[in-house]
Image 1 (cartoon, rainbow, N blue to C red):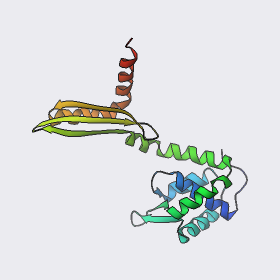
Image 2 (cartoon, rainbow, N blue to C red):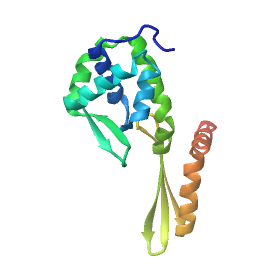
Image 3 (spheres, rainbow, N blue to C red):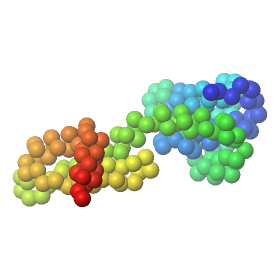
Image 4 (cartoon, rainbow, N blue to C red):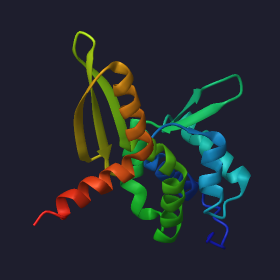
Length: 180
């Protein structure tokens, strides 16, 4: 739920922007940054824009051009240092909705990064497939190496693992859990 009282303190708005950028995994497009902040905090668009421009001017935030009219934003080391110092100045009732929105925004991207598979040559015309599964903290929770013989079979297994890693993981857990 959005905080009802309008936030017009320019310093607090800058802290909110720095806080948000410090929590995202990668540079974020302008429209997503606006949505993350304005959907969760009652900030006037003009006040937001002035604060963002000021952070870019003072090198706390940098812009990255990804196309003719597309910009992404990321926090600099100077901005990260400032964000670490002033996070406590941002009320929890503003931080929590931002954190929740960030998690929802990047959940699909994290899921894609959580499942990894690759084909490894073993000998001439013989291959194996390496499969890994990671949790949200990027901690490896499963590593599986299978000899497949042909490259075609390795590609099929790698693809199957990427599409059905949750089922495979559960079956492995069930197999070990059923042992007495």
